[in-house]
Length: 78
Image 1 (cartoon, helix red, strand yellow):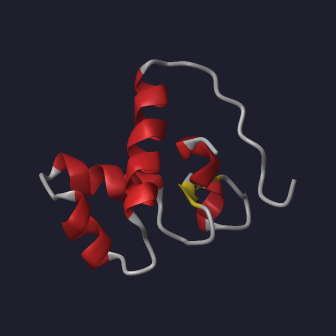
Image 2 (tube, rainbow, N blue to C red):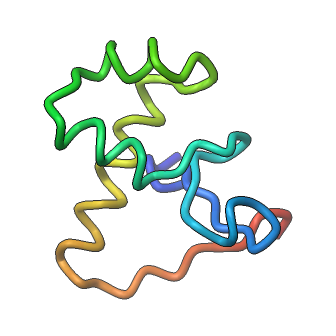
């Protein structure tokens, strides 16, 4: 399983923004926390339903976007 498998994009959840699968925690929020200098442990403590793997998945997704690659993700339920 790839870290990116933990990313979900569903138009019915958070207006289609990338989230951690099974949550309403947006990838952008996790990236904001990382940019602010929060550690993985601090972020998980802030979002109890989030796992360390979810934080790493958000970072991996951000890296893909920074490389400007086109990455088709399956919509939830597919």
